[in-house]
Structures are given as structure tokens and as C-alpha cells.
Image 1 (cartoon, rainbow, N blue to C red):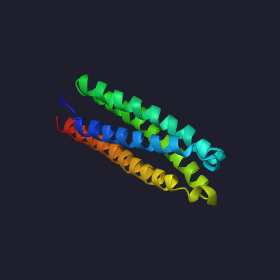
Image 2 (cartoon, rainbow, N blue to C red):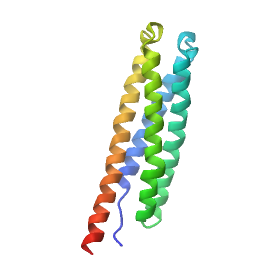
Image 3 (spheres, rainbow, N blue to C red):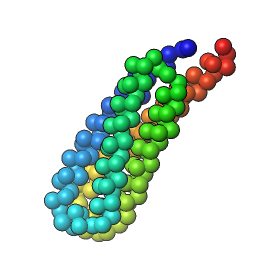
Image 4 (cartoon, one colour):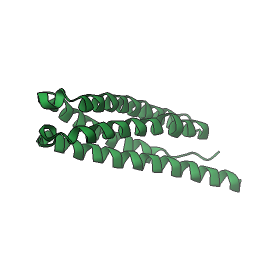
Length: 148
């Protein structure tokens, strides 16, 4: 069985982790603004963002475990189906609530919200790269198996 190199995925997940830490600091600062902190949509955003962070941590740990366990194809499929896609889903829920919260003028004018929005865009881009990378690994593995 050919090994699947997850180092690229793990590197992307570590970059994602750095972005998460930066965004979390912005969220923490935003909770000092009562206009933002009391906004129901922003509160829903933070609930989904916290779920996203937890799912990301599980995905990163799962990726490292998969790499250690001889790059098992079944574990890689479980990683994409059970962890990475649910992480992306929570991020999308969070984004939807943030977009709704930003429609309120008192929130939209907060400079920290602009920084938060930029950080979230970076998270979305990286999450997409993670998904594409893992799907590419799966496709390459399938092609290799068909050739054998």
C-alpha cells in the first residue's frame, strides 16, 4: 500500500490554527463593545466559531494520527467526511451569522469587525485548500489502487 503524504494538509491546518488564534483575539476585544456583544447574530457567530475551533482541533489531531498510522486510506476518508467537512460547515454557519450582524450600522463601523471579517476570509480560503488537498490525496490514492 502506498503511503499518503499528509504533511501538506498538516501544514495548512497549522496555518489555520494561527489564523484561528488571531481571530479569537479580535473576538475577545469585540466583546468589550456592548453594541457587538449584545447583538444576537454576533453571539450566534461566536457559538459556531467555537464549534469550528473544536472541530479544527480534532481534524488537526486526526490528521497527525492518520500520518502516524501508516497513512491509512480509510482513516483519510473518515478525516474528510467526519472532521474536515463538519469543520467547514461550522465555519459557514459562523460566517452567515457574522454577515447578518455586520448589517447593523453600530457593528459595521467597528474597526475590529473589519479585521475580524478579513480574518474569517483567510480562514475560509485555508479551509478550502485543506479540503482540496485531502480530496486530491484521496483521488491520487484511488488512481494508484486502480493501477495495481
